[in-house]
Image (tube, rainbow over all chains, first blue to last red; front, side):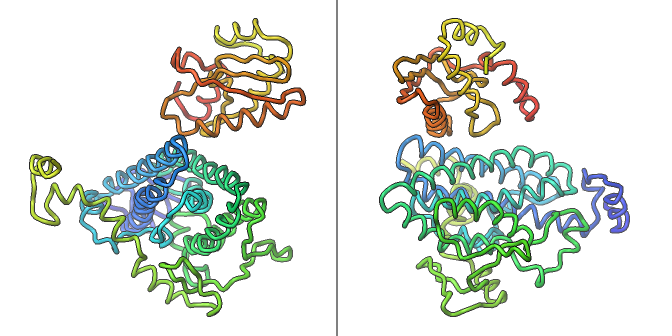
Length: 323
Length: 120
């Protein structure tokens, strides 16, 4: 059962939240499923992505912090998939029966984080992007159950950000540390900016904002990220190719955006000038180097047990094959 | 500057403290847990503090052996204490006995956690 678009918009105008499926219109339902899937997939894939670099931890304590962040991320993923279940989505199918390229998370996670320094920069930049996006959803979402869950998510993401910043400060003081951070920032900063999606002149936000899926546009969210991210990076004397425009009261990119990216080499082809968003979307859709491995990391155990890969096996068989 | 009320462990610690040590306890009230806006004193993490000849020695614990913030807390405490002009050295000893429980939260810590949305 659902309500009409007009009934839904009337409800939102009265300042009421949407609490149950029968308070949703078809457009609202589809939109909420889409945005929750992106959120859930992003949190889920961040776990294998961060785990790859966590193995480079310089101490047991540092490893513990990284594993704790991964645990938080899995918790956040679980919350979003759980809400999708309430909307009638089959969670098992969604997580275990989609092809790797069908997962909907930012392209940035398809490029491997291979060192502790890259993990620190990812916590400071990618988690800041997550914090910016989810902070916006927390403030503006019209879906009550998600809003309430995000109160906790928001606080935990803040810790991830702090983890990244603290480690970046430490690494920056080590011999060769500054250069290592700079290399990571060089390839990760433009990917972080891509994270927020198409520019406002390419994307209509009316539905997303009218329906209370989010409060700020993609370009506004990029500026919100930069309002804290850029001063932080500059405090470590890291070069970031942007400048503050006092007339426009916003940050302006000093590099071609969007641009072409050689994922295997973690290198931007800025010398080729600006690329097109169509080209970027083709790259996003084709996914990057780690997509297949990370999805496989998540799906393998389930598939071994339920036979989506090499025939159905029982728990006993799975246990025996381990011996 | 002065810690007014608290659970028995804190009252006892204060009673034994010198004026300088009381000032350092107050300084530690400015060091927040990285995950929650509650100080390490109000969380009940500080088991003891001694100060002599510029040297501060702390006994502290964590809420769990798997606490993800141990390094942060240690370095935040060191950084804050070294800001005191008469502190030149900070050493810390991690203790697990007695284990941390909620009983070690100060009334202020409890109130802050509740306001922040955590049931205690």
